[in-house]
Length: 586
Ligand code: ARG
Image 1 (tube, rainbow, N blue to C red):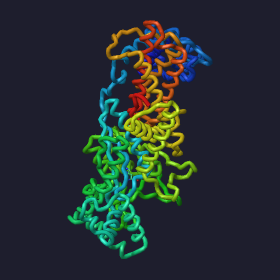
Image 2 (image 1 turned 90 degrees about the vertical axis):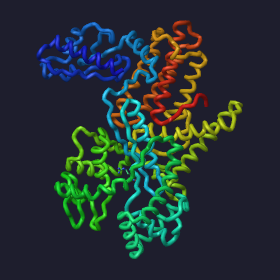
Image 3 (image 1 turned 180 degrees about the vertical axis):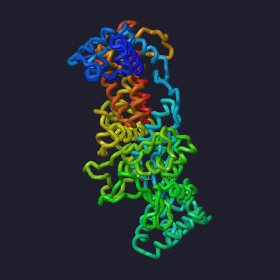
Image 4 (image 1 turned 180 degrees about the horizontal axis):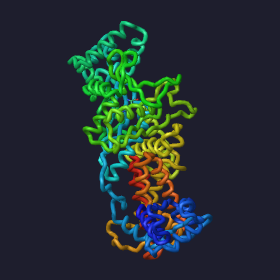
């Protein structure tokens, strides 16, 4: 209903011109959704803001604005409340006409961007030879949903997996494997990810405790970084090993077109990047290391906080890689927006490296860089999610368990209803519900909050959960199916009648979809899609309670069936933007 807001704003501007002439040249009315539906659909509070400038009482200004409005097709003559709030109600015919437009459009009337942007989403980004943890899971799920939303709105999206595949950890791992299991360095698939993680842990221990081992590990890093063929081969094998495990998770989570561009990709650019930072005076030498100091960034003792780009031993680090990557994304990928979906604990690192790249002149003002942070995943005890024995939870186990729980719920529902289903169907549906539940639980909360991981809650049929939304979809679709309505075959001008207030409310909610998606590309808060869908399903329930559908007389019957279908399609597309498929029955 972006349209509606625009129409209202333009009309108010005209009215202001007529009422106050030159005194209000650059007037931009502020129009927002009404906080209380009883007052109307939209509200304009501009009269208050103009009082000082016009030296008039707000109420008098509001009256002038309203009395100078031209008659129009979109909204009724507004009412004025309190000190000067202008309450605007849309005309029924206007909504009916808009619904007619949405009805025959596969994109539900959502426009495709007229100036598509190149959007890069830095997401998932686990580390080789380590388990992917719940933080990576959040980044993957949130990043994917943001990506899908941008894509749906017609933008070009490049999803990048900034995998940790370079640096000291490989020196340690190679040194360890040379001693313990050399075959892993020359033969494919000699290890699985679990073994690799164990070797990695051992190597870390050796590295911290044994000086000679530490020196050997360093030599291995140098060999790898100087492109020694044997080291490179071993590195490839190790990366592939991890990659296989990661890919399996991406398959389960239905993450598509995620391009791996790990830290190693930028290796050849690091020396230049640091040299240029030095020659531009952005980085300086400090106690042997090369560092960037930025205004306002202080450590706990109030001293300038360095962003280290090259360590004393000459090694380039995480920050150097991120700066080189940012530069590459701007210069080479022509990114208009670069979105980092990374845990909130890396906020300082990201802020500083982005500022450093700006300072070096590598990011122009019209490129938007944004850290989309998120909180931690907690266990039901309120502490960071761990297994019973205190280990990091393996994501594969977590997802398997979700599917297992979904299966149990499904079995018990079937039993209650005395229904028999095929094994194939049951396993497909429980897979769908289990994964959807994990995704939706993550996406339905404001990403900055720490969220408590609870299978019971995420699989509940009550409340704002995936199963609830899926069920809502199945029910609404069922009505449409029973009424045998095919929107694509209906006359484009089929009459839509919004007689009952609940029909009116449902229609408005359906038409709000585009606004919500636009909002997500600004706020990067996919939970707004969940809230919207939840609201939609409640408005639908309300409608269904008061408005019989299948037993209504024509033309009301068709009109109501259209509302059902549009609701179902909106849920289905909305869920798909969360990365969730909806079943036709469950
Ligand atoms: N590999 C990092 C980690 O596991 C995340 C990388 C995030 N992306 C970035 N461009 N720094 O913490």
